[in-house]
Image (tube, rainbow, N blue to C red; front, side):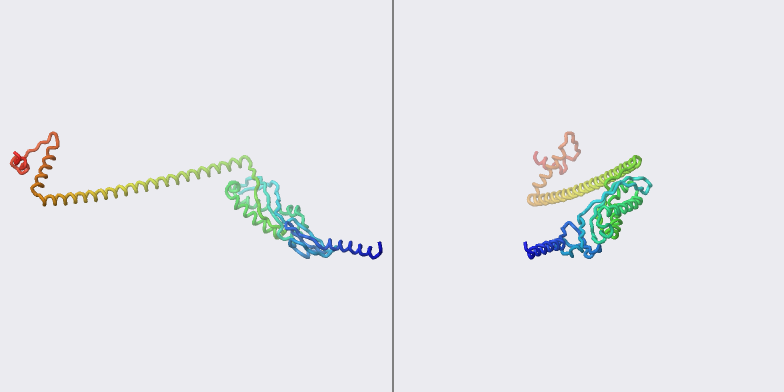
Amino acid sequence: MTGSRLFLLIVAFLGFIVASNSLYTVKESERAVLLRFREVVQNDLQPGLHFKVPFIDQVLRFDGRVQSAYILEGDYLTLEKKLLLVDSYAMWKVSDVEQFYTATRGLAARAIERLVPRVNEALRNEFGKRTVYEVVAGERDELMVHVLEQVNQAAQEELGIEILDIRVKKIDLPQTVSEDVYKRMRAERARDAREHRSQGREIAEGIRADAERQQRIILAEAYKQAQKIRGEGDATAATIYAESYQQDPEFFRFYRSLEGYRKSFSGQHNLMVVDPNGDFFNYIDAMK
């Protein structure tokens, strides 16, 4: 091997070393910073291929995905000074890479170590403002919203991480506290049941009253129509009688007399005292 070829091989090898230390990539799931002499020169590098000064610049990559921080069981006092044992957890991710690196040197364990006291403090403050019943069954969602607001603001300012959610996994109650809570819950359910039954009775009474009112309206309207029809019938009958009388007055008087006879003697024990020479028997006398 000649000296020139050896030189080219050495140059190529050195070029490969320089190139491999000059180019780097950042994945979609990563957050990264570029350090030069341990000072941040580029913050929150975007995913893709990047260039750095070889042997001088250093790239630090952090997990940019959502991570969990489990808070060990803690003791919290409620407004009535009753002790609760609570397990909780927080979901977080890196939001400010430079601040995260400065505060924790990029160590997630250190971030969690500093986050846990913040969560405990916020939970202790919120539990202390509420009764056992409110914590267990009444205002859990509102309580967690307040805790999240307090912890998230401090975590972003101090640690460069965003707290996405904080949840209570489990609440253990002492036996006496459990019995009080269950009694309170049973009383609440019984009261709700009474209110629902009362509302149901009120609705039923309203429906019944409306039905009776509709019935009265329908009957009144039917009676009104019946009276109208009866009046029209009487008027029609009177018209027919009048027309019949005008066509044959003598026959009409005869027909009315027969109607009078029929009505007068329709019963089994009818007794009438009349003058035999009166007008009532004119047609009977005429038939003799």
